[in-house]
Length: 269
Image 1 (spheres, rainbow, N blue to C red):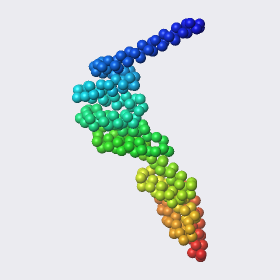
Image 2: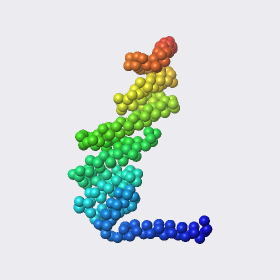
Image 3: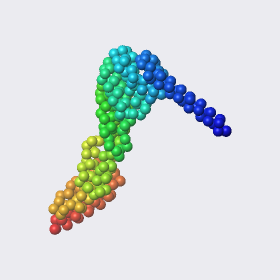
Image 4: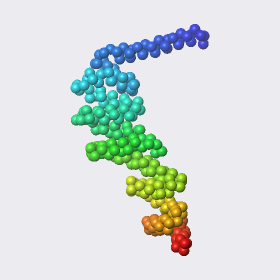
């Protein structure tokens, strides 16, 4: 393609882009709240959320106290959600619920505030601040709207995030175990069982407590060793009563026999 034609096409496209931009700028700077509202709704419906957000922001105060004000603020909050700015989304949904307390849209705003925090919930390896916030808000939602069609969804989301917290707690316990901080490992695993009493991994967690306890006893000063072997014996007895058919049974029975011998040796000492 000749250079002159490419240049012409490029200039035409640039002119078109400038024209489109200037058209939005004309709307944005018009100072006409009614026009801005109309165009903001059009952009919102066309999923051009950044432009819609810009225009909504300009007219929020102009429509305060009018029936359109509620709709504007609600859609304004949603633009942050659709643009994946979940921190501001949860802020504006929460503010909407507080500002328009009797609105039929309040239930959805309360849910979306919690759901925006859910979207911020990271992998279990990272800080779980937003996970905890989301769980708290979802639990509050279920309490506030027990007949809502979203209750089941809320409970599923809560279960999902609690599983993430449980996984994080388990991995923290394993980390302590791997670096030979056995008392800290025991504490972490025991706290996990307290915080998540319905866990499906209770057998594995109790097995890890046994291993940490046994190794803690092996590595204790002489004066504490017998006491800690006896504590491990109690853990083994409790475990085998609770999980009679466990795949760890043989390992634990062998450990119990070893402990008996170790205690005899300590008594002789």
